View (cartoon, each protein chain N blue to C red):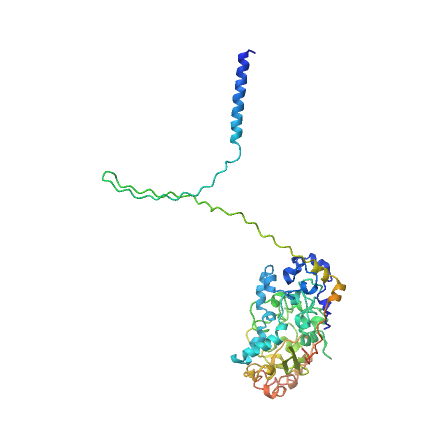
Length: 367
Length: 116
């Protein structure tokens, strides 16, 4: 994503903003600084680039700001939970330092979606300081969720079609991922897939007529119970390996192995009443036993506590995929299922519950 | 009209004027009451009972009306110092000025490698 020049980041290009309810609050009321100073340095003394959401937004947007404490975008609980699970309490101070250096810039605030681009993209107004009720998805959502989600959704991976919701439906992120979900108004969540699927494919107004017996031959009761929709309706996606973080002269950075395109069906690592399926697509995440070694030795002593092939909902949904070509496109096709051979030797223990030991046998049938 | 009748008429007129003056005086502003300290409740010592008189309840101290404490000089709301955003707005809405004063951050070598 192209970076804005320094002046562009703070340029109020449309002065009607000053007449808006947010503009009328005045610059100094939100950002501080020195009233009446003429020189740049003096005027910017004490300036806060990103005003505190709780103090300034909550008086008007009380419910939203309070609920937002539950948002995984805000509290990063999904990361802290899984890092803690792989580690031990005595290692957490070093890991917290690591998170502060490498993860906090991904933590979003009200302004980093509704006013400017997120800090880890360099910041800068998305629309001349206008407060956008619906953030521009290309500058906010997919600005951060680019390598996997944006590339999948818009068909940027070689040879893989864009998601039908995008290419046919032109649907923005917010048409599925609601404001309530983004703002944590649906309640606390410990990780992205905590609770019922959100969005759910069969939600009202979506594919609510899709069900066993709907005259689609593969839509059998067994298939609905055995696997998530994405097992049949998503296709090859990106898998990441071995991300290592470090610092040099106070600058945080990472190095990651080239991603690998693959589609793998694994045993559901999050099987529950809400997600009862035995099989789901699984994606390798960039974790590595030495991922945080810069911050200390053996910081992930319980590395095997969590799989490295994770429950996935790829954003490249198609009606027809290689899996839907015939029964034996899946049945008896070992290539599609996560096997021990697909897993790095040092990660076999972590993924033992995800690996498919016995694939469904070929049945020699078409549709 | 006799002289006596004229004298009576003038007399009646005078009486009416006096009454009018008194009435007007009565309609004037409230008299300025000099604030007085509320009277302390009188401490009543029980009188020694006498053989001849039936014992009587000692009179209770009279409830004194609550009077708000005299206020000192009325305080005025602090006048907010007007915040002047003119300079902020002037600069941040002027593309040329911003370009002239903006400082590009130092180019730091991109240390990260691979997809984020």
